[in-house]
Image (cartoon, rainbow, N blue to C red; front, side):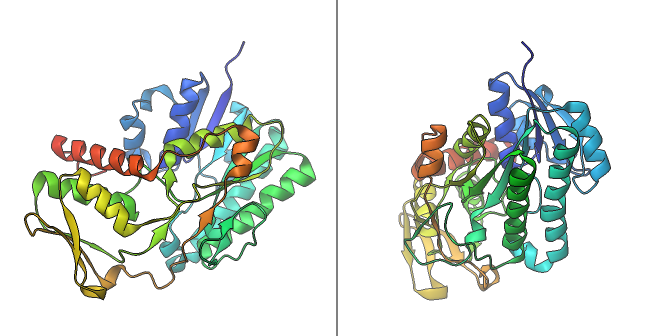
Length: 346
């Protein structure tokens, strides 16, 4: 019996790399689509020891003809669309780039499937940003209103509607994952969680200067990227395609995240001062660990959102995400190991 085949668009990213690893464990033949210029970003695939186990394909989702040819040749059973622009702050600086990548790119993929591979099942990665600003402690689900408040969120909402249209109009098996924040050792350092664990490991192994943050009190519903990506695969093995919220339903503050990472790294963190002058220090030595800087304030930051994944769990049998404490421990541990090995550029 022929192994199933999957094409992962955005394979060099956090989610793409984890999806590839999970699929290889299930004996899939895995093709990984990546953009020109991202070949130097294969460190995640190397970290998981799968770089030589997948077939890398140079794909630009902005080029529809090339996309059609590639999908026609591979005829994948599954496509995971986890490519595109993913930074909220950057979307204000480069709205046209964000719109083009996330809307046009998604449309090109859907059209290619419709034209040459209608039996292919596709998973589209959307974002909890589509919900916009919400009331505190309200659990958001698949029926919640979409009120995007930044170009990135608008692009994801529009792409969601395209996926739904192709599902309803053309009968494509197309599932949507509305993803809340999901973290792990493969996260890039531009996200606050990895910024914390990277710098905590630096301070623990090398010493040096404290690092800057924009807020200690921002909160997020943080889950595990490794666990979320397992659920992405489960959605495509379900009996029908649908929309699913991926979340934990629990909020964690930057303050708590910072404290847990610091404790794992061997510090005794405490907070001193108020407002913009508040700092995190090691209470044993007085060493400053982190402080606040106005340069990292996010004037367009959305409110804390909580997600309800009960539909995802009921439909797919997904067991949920590991607890935030374990995620923080894993991330800090891996970053300490990297610093000890002199791996500081990932």
